[in-house]
Length: 175
Ligand SMILES: [Ca+2]
Ligand SMILES: [Ca+2]
Image (cartoon, rainbow, N blue to C red; front, side, top):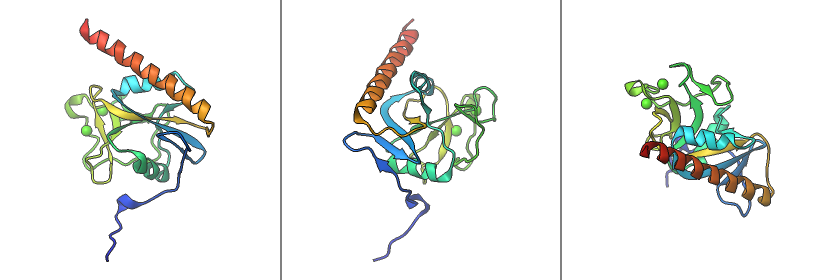
């Protein structure tokens, strides 16, 4: 039997938090994968309500780890909305590593200012999109959380905020 190893199968070690869905520890950081699909603004706003931030990728290893846990298009905490073509992370840092698809980011229709993992791309590479698209997102804490109780509180609080932002957004469309 022949095993074909592709770049996609680069595996990086990470920990799954026991008895808690969609929560992972990598390099002393905690990652909560939120499966509500919402636009980038709402995802970012919901995140800002806690001591954390939308996913920030600092290394190729961290990027490879994320590719092992996602199962749908997923936002990165990365935008060029302030200054077209100058991509920066939600904490203000410039890119030290990037993983764009070929011919991306292309700023289609001058509207694409938010980065996400495109699961249609061969290696789940990054693409830029507008603020209308609804994708899943990852909430990153720059420290390790393993107490299930703390995680439950964080996750419930976060999902409540997601619902609030979705409601506000829907209200503003209705008006
Ligand atoms: Ca752009
Ligand atoms: Ca694009």
